[in-house]
Amino acid sequence: MKKVLFVCLGNICRSPAAHGVLLSMIEKEGLKEQVGVDSAGTSNAHVGHKPDRRMSTAAKHRGILLESRARQFDRSDFENFDLVVVMDQSNYDSCKAVALKREHLEKLTLMSEFTPSFKQKDIPDPYYGEEDGFELVLDMVTEGCENILKKLNNG
Ligand code: 4NP
Image (tube, rainbow, N blue to C red):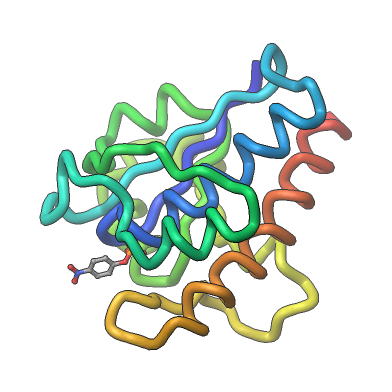
C-alpha cells in the first residue's frame, strides 16, 4: 500500500479537502487496498477540530464528505507515509525544517507539482477569503489528486 499525507497550516481547510477528494476517488476506483490517505497541519492551533464549515459545505455540494479531525504534522509522518504533499511554500518550509534525512526530503512535494493547468505555485489559503476561494481549493486539489493517483499507478 502507498500512503499519502496532505499537509496545510491548520488542517481544517485545504488538506482536509484534498484528503476527502482523494478518499472519494479511492473508494470510486476500488483502490482501498492500494492507497491510504491522511492529512495534518503544521500548526497546532486547530488540533481536534472538524474541517471548517465553509470547506465542508463546498465539498458536500460536489458529493464529497470531509470527515477528518485536525492533527499536527510530526516528524514520524516522514517515516509512516510515502508521499507528503504540502499546499504551499510555507508548509514546505515548515516540514523541511523537521526532516532529518534525505529520504524524508525526497517524500516532500508541493501540490502544485500535480496541478499543471493552474498557474499558482501555492494552493491559496481560503481561510480569510470569500466563498470562491473554497471552490478554487476544490478545483485545484481535484486535479492534483487525479495526478497523484496516476503517479502511484505508474509505479
Ligand atoms: P488551512 O487554512 O491551512 O487550509 O487549514 C487555515 C486554517 C486556519 C488558519 C489559517 C489557515 N488560522 O489562521 O487559524
